[in-house]
Image (cartoon, rainbow, N blue to C red; front, side, top):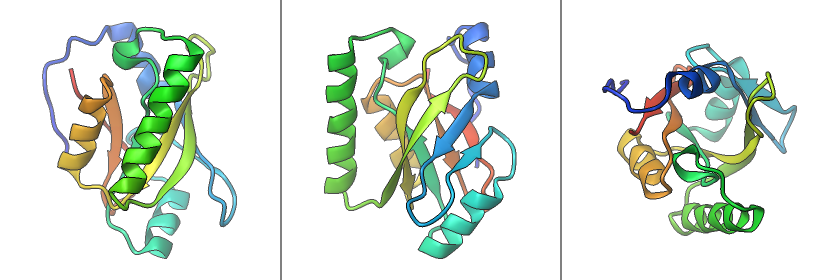
Amino acid sequence: MVKFMTTRIDPDLLAIYKKSDYRVHDPAGVDFVMHIEEYCPALHRLMQREKVRMSGFVSAYNPRSEPRSDLENTMAQERLRQEVMMRGWKFLEGVGEDPGGECAGEPCLLILDISFSDCEALGRSYGQNAVLWSEVDAIPRLLLLH
């Protein structure tokens, strides 16, 4: 399931999102990189190992892609981490990185077994332009929120 919508996101920023590396630190094995609309074997293995059918990749950094201070970003990311733990979702640490270096990398959480609607709501609640969401097919899709 992919949600299509008209977006107000700047086309250049959208292009950066689409070409970015989405790195995940898997403490049980080798770290891996996800790309939008590309099957990720390592994500597939992780989802099988954890017996989950969905995942989301979410950050609390720089809402609406408007730069915030390190302190504001760190505090927002910690609130996200605490909310995810409170809801009982398993997660792994990650980072979204622009390989061209136009945008600084942002810490993210790969949240396991999060529904499409919960992933969308979580991204919106932290003011994000977009999040990644994947079904059992282990193909991360860009979910535009604005």
